Amino acid sequence: MKLHPEDLLSFLAVAEEGGVARAADRLHCSQPTVSGRLQRLQLALGEALYLREGRGIRLSPAGESLLPLLRRLRADLQQIEDWVSQRQQQQEGQLRIAASSTVANYFLMEHLARFRARYPGIELRLQTGALALEDLDWHDWDLLFTEEAIVSGTLPAHLEQVPWREDELVAILPRQHPWARAGKKSASWAEILAQPIVWREPHSGIRRRVEAALSAAGLKPSYTVEVTGVEALREAVAAGLGIGFASVEALDKVRWPLASLRLEPPKGLFWTLYLVHPRAEYGSHALRAFLDLLLPQAGAQDSAKRTQAP
Picture 1: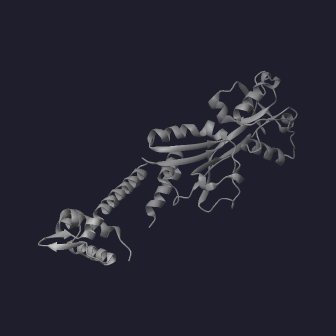
Picture 2: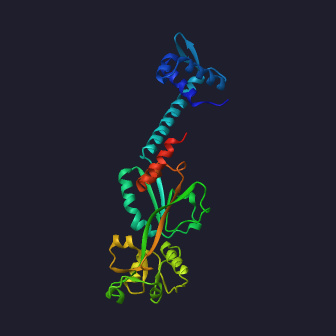
Picture 3: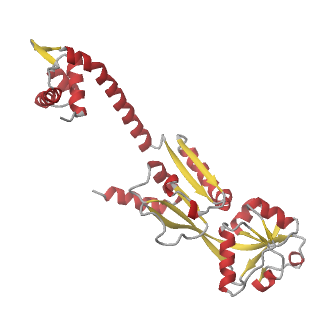
């Protein structure tokens, strides 16, 4: 027969209080309820745990033997309750985030700093670099920031993808470049492709967005210089190896000593950054708190859904 924790803890209360009546007061329940639990426990055990002695009880050898085990059980359950409370209050937990270098360096850190200040008990684990989505183990991460939309149907059912923010991509070049000296503000693809180009690594979202725009225009670029990472791109362009492509917001934040040109004038070339996270019913308390900070409107909607859920 299965043992029930409330039966075990009721017996512990009876043993420590010396009787059913005082145990019922301690447990905030009726005497018949406590007596019923004791009967069920003794039936499951198959022998008596105590003997009645006047208005009190005297533990049997089986009851004496069980007592220290129950005290450990009570301590373990209290630890579990404390753990649950800490997680609900974001005092304990872990947030595992994967993001591309561009997203991590220029868009994400300020949000992580705000979250850390508000919830110092949450452990943050951040992996940055080019994301090879086909090689990712989705279960290793609570949140992924991507530089392009993931094809519908390729995500596991417990995950959802939402657009996070939009940014413009521009060509970057040294300030001493003739175009920069002439005050040129934009450039066509034909003009760009006539110049040497410094490309990011194949998994770069910026590179893929530029390649897609060129393909849509019926153009095919040449690949003469390829570097890995944002900093390597900056150094290569600054050294005069060619023209590169970067985010406008990133340029505004880091103040690189480079000039920029608008692409596809006059409309410009834009890209959308996405985030992938577990659906509301699968997310941790820490993740929900971070999404509330990152996406206040979406976080409020998720909270409302959770409140209305049966």
